[in-house]
Image (cartoon, rainbow, N blue to C red; front, side, top):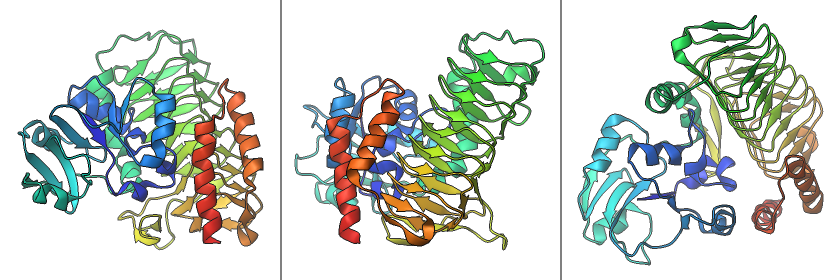
Length: 403
């Protein structure tokens, strides 16, 4: 099986400026991981945007990245919603059949020509039998935020409920509905911690530390080696990936990995990339005073689009830093590599590699960005590689071309 990103990958920018759509976290797992589990495929074969290929081959030398198979195989869109009827439709595909939703291929079984394009009209012209499967693909980051709570429960039921765990807790720890709680053996829970799984499951992965008087309400996932600061309030629908430090109040949000929000301040219905730092007392709005649907900037459309929901916070790209006391408006999109501060309201769209207060943004110098990125990664024992620098250099050049 090959999991592919189609021509709509830009609808998930800024998060997919630096990763495949399939590597976006939603629920406990990433989209790609869940599809591999549900479709019983153990290999990691992906088809991604060409500009990401060098980085992926560097990070995943054992993966099959953008290589045509020698034999007929199943291709599955990384945007596929994991619903039983969608999985069944994919599993039922025969040779020469292609599932299509609108203008997008959902899945197909075959051996396409080397010059094929991931557009639905290619498959009709190539003689595939076209089968319509409507409303089965995620459209953008807002869709993932809204589906996160459902997938947290789905992943718990399918992948964690029967796994071995270590459920000894320290005195003073309160666990409500313990049959909906999964705790790895090396998790540390300090006195005063409350794990409330009354409204959904809670998973604490290996190496997690929860400091005193923190409250976690399900459904929620805390990833490997992440730290929840003292007195934190983590509400339902929240996924925190590995190696994050999170405090304050968080609701209905996704942290990809390696990001920090250590201090007080509210974050709601948001998607935070990797290597992001959110300063003390920074807050975002996730609901308009008018209670109308929230609109947000789409990189793909180069315009604001309707999210279809009243609840939407902010979407923040990798390596962005937000200073203390920042205020972020409803539906704000903040690109990769930004460094923002001051009391100006951050609103609408902040382009990649923006620097300064929201009222007078300039371009972040690329050499300075690279120095910070290298320093931040070295603190976690990782390096800022040539492939990463090349990728971000392209993004930075595209930003300068728009000025």
